[in-house]
Length: 165
Image 1 (cartoon, helix red, strand yellow):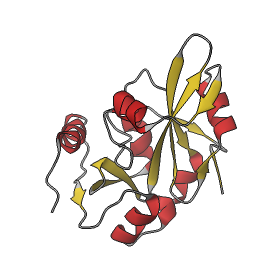
Image 2: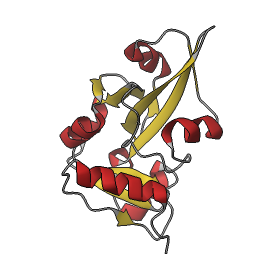
Image 3: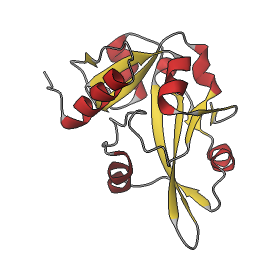
Protein backbone atom coordinates (compact mmCIF):
# COMPACT_ATOMS: atom_id res chain seq x y z
CA UNK A 1 0.00 0.00 0.00
CA UNK A 2 1.13 3.51 -0.82
CA UNK A 3 2.22 5.56 2.20
CA UNK A 4 1.42 9.26 2.54
CA UNK A 5 3.84 11.35 0.52
CA UNK A 6 4.79 14.93 1.41
CA UNK A 7 2.20 16.14 -1.13
CA UNK A 8 -0.55 14.05 0.49
CA UNK A 9 0.47 15.30 3.95
CA UNK A 10 0.30 18.88 2.64
CA UNK A 11 -3.31 18.34 1.50
CA UNK A 12 -4.21 16.64 4.79
CA UNK A 13 -2.70 19.49 6.83
CA UNK A 14 -4.54 22.06 4.70
CA UNK A 15 -7.87 20.31 5.35
CA UNK A 16 -7.14 20.21 9.10
CA UNK A 17 -6.19 23.92 9.19
CA UNK A 18 -9.41 24.80 7.40
CA UNK A 19 -11.43 22.75 9.87
CA UNK A 20 -12.79 20.49 7.13
CA UNK A 21 -14.23 17.22 8.42
CA UNK A 22 -12.72 15.16 5.62
CA UNK A 23 -10.80 11.91 5.76
CA UNK A 24 -8.30 10.99 3.06
CA UNK A 25 -8.79 7.58 1.50
CA UNK A 26 -5.97 5.37 0.29
CA UNK A 27 -6.84 3.37 -2.80
CA UNK A 28 -5.30 0.00 -3.59
CA UNK A 29 -5.67 0.75 -7.31
CA UNK A 30 -4.40 3.85 -9.05
CA UNK A 31 -6.62 6.86 -9.62
CA UNK A 32 -4.37 8.38 -12.28
CA UNK A 33 -7.39 9.10 -14.49
CA UNK A 34 -11.03 9.94 -13.73
CA UNK A 35 -12.02 6.55 -15.13
CA UNK A 36 -9.52 4.75 -12.87
CA UNK A 37 -10.71 6.71 -9.83
CA UNK A 38 -14.38 6.01 -10.57
CA UNK A 39 -13.68 2.28 -10.88
CA UNK A 40 -11.64 2.22 -7.66
CA UNK A 41 -14.34 4.13 -5.76
CA UNK A 42 -17.31 2.42 -7.43
CA UNK A 43 -18.81 5.80 -8.32
CA UNK A 44 -19.91 7.74 -11.37
CA UNK A 45 -17.01 9.05 -13.46
CA UNK A 46 -18.66 12.48 -13.44
CA UNK A 47 -18.24 12.73 -9.64
CA UNK A 48 -14.46 12.70 -10.03
CA UNK A 49 -12.92 16.18 -10.07
CA UNK A 50 -10.33 16.66 -12.79
CA UNK A 51 -7.87 19.38 -11.76
CA UNK A 52 -6.63 20.69 -15.10
CA UNK A 53 -3.86 23.24 -15.24
CA UNK A 54 -3.53 25.37 -18.34
CA UNK A 55 -1.08 28.08 -19.26
CA UNK A 56 -1.96 31.30 -21.02
CA UNK A 57 0.97 32.62 -23.01
CA UNK A 58 1.37 36.08 -24.44
CA UNK A 59 4.42 37.92 -25.70
CA UNK A 60 5.56 38.91 -22.22
CA UNK A 61 4.61 36.15 -19.81
CA UNK A 62 3.06 32.75 -19.24
CA UNK A 63 0.31 32.62 -16.62
CA UNK A 64 -1.33 29.51 -15.13
CA UNK A 65 -5.07 28.92 -14.71
CA UNK A 66 -6.71 25.93 -13.01
CA UNK A 67 -10.01 24.44 -14.17
CA UNK A 68 -11.87 21.93 -12.02
CA UNK A 69 -14.18 19.89 -14.21
CA UNK A 70 -16.28 16.77 -14.01
CA UNK A 71 -14.48 13.51 -14.81
CA UNK A 72 -16.91 12.65 -17.61
CA UNK A 73 -16.32 15.91 -19.46
CA UNK A 74 -13.51 17.76 -21.25
CA UNK A 75 -12.31 21.27 -20.62
CA UNK A 76 -13.76 23.97 -22.88
CA UNK A 77 -10.53 25.85 -23.52
CA UNK A 78 -12.23 28.88 -25.09
CA UNK A 79 -14.44 29.32 -22.01
CA UNK A 80 -11.52 28.69 -19.65
CA UNK A 81 -9.55 31.46 -21.35
CA UNK A 82 -12.48 33.90 -21.28
CA UNK A 83 -13.33 33.12 -17.65
CA UNK A 84 -9.71 33.42 -16.52
CA UNK A 85 -9.64 37.03 -17.77
CA UNK A 86 -6.10 36.41 -18.93
CA UNK A 87 -4.96 37.56 -22.35
CA UNK A 88 -3.02 35.26 -24.64
CA UNK A 89 -3.13 31.79 -26.13
CA UNK A 90 -4.28 28.91 -23.90
CA UNK A 91 -2.13 25.78 -23.92
CA UNK A 92 -1.85 22.46 -22.10
CA UNK A 93 1.42 22.54 -20.16
CA UNK A 94 3.96 19.76 -19.85
CA UNK A 95 4.44 17.71 -16.69
CA UNK A 96 7.38 19.81 -15.50
CA UNK A 97 5.30 23.02 -15.63
CA UNK A 98 2.40 21.35 -13.78
CA UNK A 99 4.72 20.14 -11.01
CA UNK A 100 6.43 23.54 -10.73
CA UNK A 101 3.15 25.47 -10.46
CA UNK A 102 1.03 23.08 -8.38
CA UNK A 103 3.58 21.03 -6.47
CA UNK A 104 1.82 17.88 -7.70
CA UNK A 105 2.57 15.39 -10.45
CA UNK A 106 0.08 14.88 -13.30
CA UNK A 107 -2.46 12.26 -12.26
CA UNK A 108 -2.32 13.40 -8.65
CA UNK A 109 -3.02 17.14 -8.88
CA UNK A 110 -5.17 18.17 -5.94
CA UNK A 111 -7.45 21.21 -6.22
CA UNK A 112 -6.26 22.23 -2.74
CA UNK A 113 -3.14 24.15 -1.71
CA UNK A 114 -2.94 25.89 -5.11
CA UNK A 115 -1.68 29.49 -4.96
CA UNK A 116 -4.43 32.09 -4.57
CA UNK A 117 -2.67 34.00 -7.37
CA UNK A 118 -3.81 31.37 -9.87
CA UNK A 119 -7.37 31.74 -11.18
CA UNK A 120 -9.39 28.74 -9.94
CA UNK A 121 -12.38 28.04 -12.16
CA UNK A 122 -14.98 25.46 -11.10
CA UNK A 123 -17.34 23.91 -13.61
CA UNK A 124 -20.98 24.25 -12.57
CA UNK A 125 -21.53 20.71 -13.95
CA UNK A 126 -19.83 19.32 -10.83
CA UNK A 127 -22.91 20.42 -8.89
CA UNK A 128 -24.78 17.40 -10.37
CA UNK A 129 -23.35 15.18 -7.63
CA UNK A 130 -23.92 15.17 -3.86
CA UNK A 131 -20.40 13.90 -3.21
CA UNK A 132 -17.39 14.68 -5.37
CA UNK A 133 -14.01 12.97 -5.25
CA UNK A 134 -10.70 14.77 -5.62
CA UNK A 135 -7.06 13.81 -5.65
CA UNK A 136 -5.26 14.27 -2.36
CA UNK A 137 -1.92 14.84 -4.06
CA UNK A 138 -1.10 11.33 -5.25
CA UNK A 139 -2.59 8.76 -7.64
CA UNK A 140 -3.51 6.48 -4.71
CA UNK A 141 -4.99 9.10 -2.36
CA UNK A 142 -8.39 10.82 -2.68
CA UNK A 143 -10.94 12.61 -0.53
CA UNK A 144 -14.70 13.20 -0.71
CA UNK A 145 -16.04 16.76 -0.81
CA UNK A 146 -19.33 18.56 -1.40
CA UNK A 147 -19.61 21.14 -4.16
CA UNK A 148 -20.06 24.11 -1.80
CA UNK A 149 -17.10 23.01 0.32
CA UNK A 150 -14.99 22.72 -2.84
CA UNK A 151 -15.83 26.32 -3.72
CA UNK A 152 -15.03 27.50 -0.21
CA UNK A 153 -11.73 25.63 0.14
CA UNK A 154 -10.42 26.57 -3.32
CA UNK A 155 -11.82 30.12 -3.48
CA UNK A 156 -13.09 28.91 -6.83
CA UNK A 157 -15.20 30.85 -9.27
CA UNK A 158 -18.21 28.89 -10.54
CA UNK A 159 -18.43 28.98 -14.34
CA UNK A 160 -21.12 27.65 -16.68
CA UNK A 161 -19.95 25.92 -19.89
CA UNK A 162 -16.44 25.39 -18.53
CA UNK A 163 -16.62 21.86 -19.90
CA UNK A 164 -18.12 19.95 -22.79
CA UNK A 165 -19.06 16.33 -23.47
